[in-house]
Length: 299
Image (cartoon, rainbow, N blue to C red; front, side, top):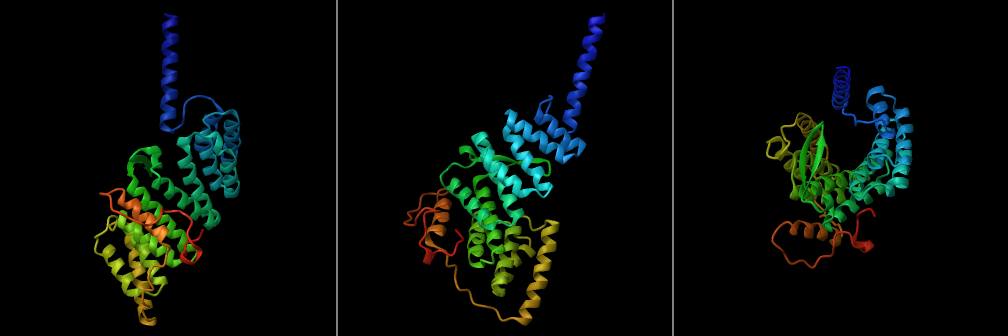
């Protein structure tokens, strides 16, 4: 009877522990990585979590997750430069499957630090990976997570998202010609209201108000996906007010055309064509070396 009672008690204790880990979304066990997650999520001791994440990395304990999670925590503590160096130094210990998520963390860190050239180069590298058919480890979709919910992302959606991020990086460099080009391509692939607002802003900055209004109207009329999002509605209304103010004080400038190198734009075209019936193209691959006098993209 004592043995049965002891086993029952042990079982209940194990079930209680499992329930605790499930509720707090903690991995089970007592390894350095598990303790790091406990410090991060339960104790809210981020400095202590970093120490334990380092121990996990050095011990080879769930290195993929430990390195990524540590970098995220470092970013929260305004230690982004340190996080960048950590990823660069230790990513070779991580599996091939972890490299894409590490790149995504690096892009956020570069953005946080204002390292626009590095951010742009890494975004272009990710597009190159897609063009070579190596995105999502060769699978047509991947599982992503946002606000605790999982959903499937297609290669087309990912390409459009990366182009949108690239456009925003060019906007920060005030390279509006390059930003416009990639935003337009992103909208051709997978249009949405957020990128339309960014394209509108890009055109406003170039004082091309008629084109900007035309882009914004698709959002205001609810034509594009995401137009009904509350934040997007507020932003589109703010853009409309800015546009109306500028239209009264500034003459509309003519479009000078998008003067990006044929190699870059042709490469995006080739990528798009690969999703449809083959179309003959003489243009070069997306990221081959472009002659400097034809390339306005930051390299």
